Length: 124
Image 1 (cartoon, rainbow, N blue to C red):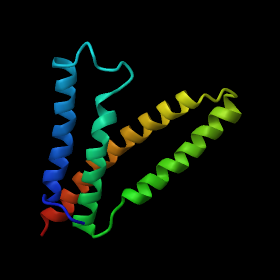
Image 2: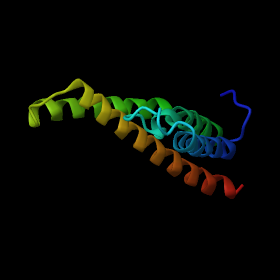
Image 3: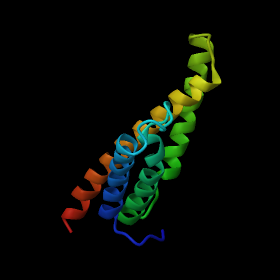
Image 4: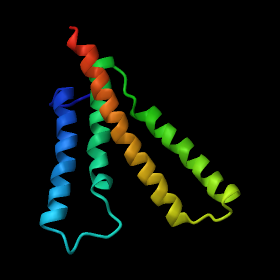
C-alpha cells in the first residue's frame, strides 16, 4: 500500500481531521452547517484510509474489505429488521441508521486496531 506516513501518523491524522472538522462546524459554519450532517460523517473516509494503512503496514493485509462486507451484512439485517419486524421500511431512515452504525463502528475499529498495533509493534 502506497502511503507517505507510518501507521501512528495516519491514526493521528484521522483523529485530528475529526477534531478540525468539528471546530470548523462549531466556529465558522455554525449557521450554515446542514442539520443532519455530523462531523463523523465526513471524517470517516480518513478513518477508513487509516484503518487500511495501519492493518497493511503492521500485518501486511488490509481489513478494510472484510469491514465493508460486514457493513453490507449489517445493512441486510437492518433492512430485514425494518421490513419484517417493525413493518415500517423507510429508505431515508434505513440509510441514516446504516451510515451512523457504520461510522461509529469504523471509529471503534480504528481505535481498537491502533491499540492492538501499538501492542504488537512495541515489542520489536
